Length: 348
Ligand code: NAD
Ligand code: DAU
View 1 (cartoon, rainbow, N blue to C red):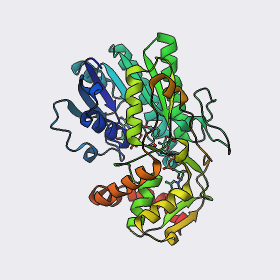
View 2: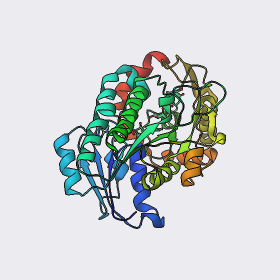
View 3: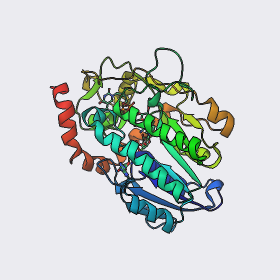
View 4: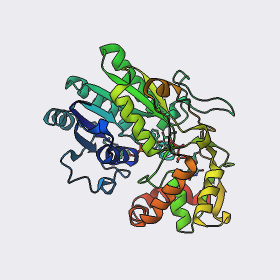
């Protein structure tokens, strides 16, 4: 990784902050020539400087607050820091919010990506990586897995905006020959995940003896991937992926669980009763099943998931137990307005 100076946009969110921590703290020899990591993050409701605490003393790290759509700021940052690689994690990421407010997803996920892409190319950034999602493929029935050539068929404004961004990145490669590529990952879990998402919401609700709102019949399937496994995959693609390509990243078949099984497992780890579970009105446009074929990244870059879901889930529950202050602060603030708006009638 000779002289990599990396800009991580959205690096104060869940996956971006775990990626930065993992990069800067891991002993992996391939990190040795990482010169600098600069995080650019707007600190929306989902961004949190606490996610990056402890990194500020590292000479290799800098945090800048700002919007990926701010052309003047991004241009200056790319120049001043001599950025060689960009990894774009910045996004509005929650499906339920995209049902309530689709426009903010268009602004950040589509417009933001195009601005960042334009400016990266203009500044001579060597490589641009777009962090995307398996949700762009839509929903699977009982059989099969997403491959990179599965047609895009997004169900929500979130996934439609991510699909649009992917196409803009791939078009930039085709039009200009720009060294840009895309990863599409399944559901991540781990520390520092904002408690609007299934696992941290249910763990923290259970710890507060609140109800766990299971959408529909609870039989929707997600393919769970520990965030550290995702970080390893991102670095592999950033370093050695082929320009203009898409790489699927996903959990192994043993990590494809129905939501109801995830819910029961969380309650069992915490020693809480199943009576906390509550079936509620389904999410609109709720995708039934995700499952990812990751044979391309395995064959080309030697990546596959390592953390068994049962082990990773246990470690993650333990982290939320040990870090109550982190999530209690979030759950006492602005987030509760969304929770009230979205869940109060469902749980009434
Ligand atoms: P997150 O919501 O936790 O973090 C998003 C971060 O982006 C926040 O820190 C936020 O402040 C920042 N941000 C938002 N708008 C911005 C803007 N205009 N300019 C600069 N920063 C901005 O999301 P996450 O779960 O960490 O997801 C990160 C990326 O990975 C997203 O692109 C998401 O689509 C993708 N992804 C997520 C998952 C998952 O399971 N969470 C799976 C696959 C892909
Ligand atoms: O597949 C990758 C995607 O995974 C990412 O692109 C998204 O950014 C990320 O949010 C995630 O999307 P999901 O919609 O799958 O994640 P979420 O945690 O919101 O929901 C997981 C499953 O749990 C889904 O089937 C809906 C269900 N669910 C979720 C919540 C928040 C419930 O039953 N109740 C809930 O309260």
